[in-house]
Length: 325
Image (cartoon, rainbow, N blue to C red; front, side, top):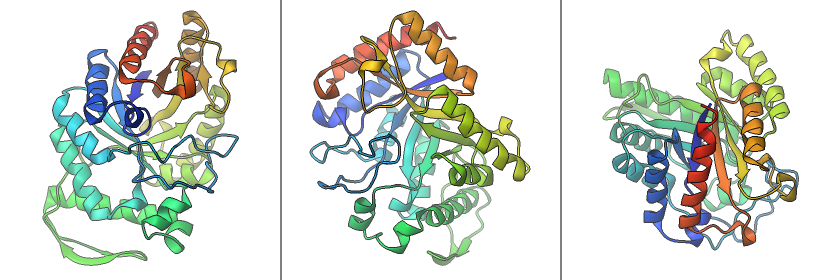
């Protein structure tokens, strides 16, 4: 199983340190032998959020408006030129937030800068307040799944233009244009891997249509098995095989100094002794997980972890990961 590290382009890094600390974490992750580093995506954070967070039982997202949010695409560009081997992923890029042609150009540019290390995890979004603040309330939010699919159709067409140099046109529900060129191709061919984020039947159908990976979040091993059964059904309907996909997950949190049952409000927590952590991570692998975006953590007040402590936690997790390889 491969292991990646979320580098904190919002959240921890916003509370402690600055952009240089975020890039330092990415460089350190590469030196420690992790396979990938990951950024998250919000453009800003409304001070009042009524939308239900879909990935935990409480429905409350653990985000705060007083944290810095560093642009994921800009951060990825910096990582691309400061590292040489580690893969650089988005968990996940909210596709409807940005113009599709600009977004395609930015991703292709980063893939070229990194010489083919981008992993594009995508999502449709969930926070209605953020959509509204971006001028995307109403139909764009209500039909954000269809909007995502149209934006990705445009992106794939743009990336293909970067190879064959034929101008592209698009006549869709949300966007129309004619005969555009000058678009960049990705370093990876035919384009960057597209990992579909989400859970349930709708996400599984999107995987089957154009995904090269399935990207879930904070599931237990038995839940992963259930999710992959649904993905498998949709892949079969589309005439595709599960071997075409890489199975990844944001999580689990690896609690390095305590009992996982002591953590409330965060699903998929692995903890206990080193042997217990190795055993539980092995259970994830047996369930079908191939690439874990693990969050190394110590119990600290409000989970606030300065960069130097995150570095220490990463080093400890790297030692554990070696036992699984």
